[in-house]
Figure 1: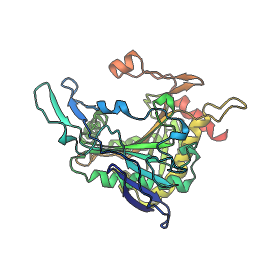
Figure 2: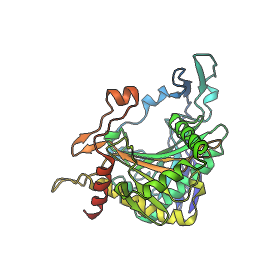
Figure 3: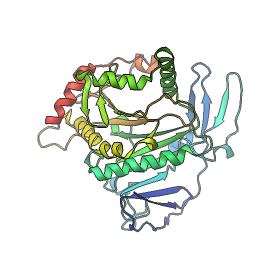
Figure 4: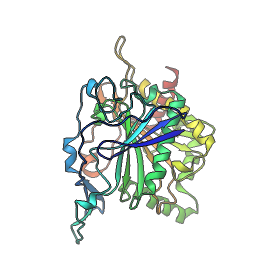
Length: 367
């Protein structure tokens, strides 16, 4: 992997990732952009003990632009975008409308109180462009490009984890308008949080309790148990296993674990990195095969969220790196909406049994 770092017109960082050195990445961002000021703040919910980010400036972010005005396509034919180069393989840049940003403390003052605790929304939000092809999807990439994306995620995890005040780095992709995506170009995001999000904190608490009770790691035990229960297995490699969790929340949900427990992406070895792209692309293609398009229609693209769960930089030593992939589609033309019990109480009711979901994902490999 070869990386080239540069700056956009307003001072934000842009990093190109290429498989080989030699690509020209010296194009200058010629847009007349003024530096943006982040007014992000984080507020502590006194009832749940969870941090909530307030980023009102994001109301002005780009929303479903025409394909010819996509800000993630390369700059060409006189149209200037967030990517100055005329082409690229993988590109990562600081979000112009971030939920969290370095320098938030310059505009937001911390406040402490028994019921009202507020902090500047310090952190960083980046956009990861998987390909310059506007009409592609991650599932359309070849294994070499998917490996380059993995290398970019790893590079950013290492660099963002080293920033002062960053507690956790979260790499993820949202795909599909049904999920809430506002830019059609194939891309993901990375958040560098100044706090440990509540879901991660709960996982760590459960893992520490399991260690105290059994002397073993929760995630190692979970992976071993699922590998011995073929009814929920989806696919296996030499170094990775994908399975539907026993208590899946979403209609079709798959967790992908490396067999060797590691804390984050930076700790994967070369054998694990080499095998990941093929398995991950196969999972994404099976998700698309779950709901075949009608004859003569455009190929189906199942909406999904794909997220890497990594251990926080300080604490969380019991948490194991793994990827969670799920869709909100429960049947052709039908979505799983978070209704009263899910949204109001976080008490999920799933429409598809985990065993049935795993069987359908295994069958999807033969379509």
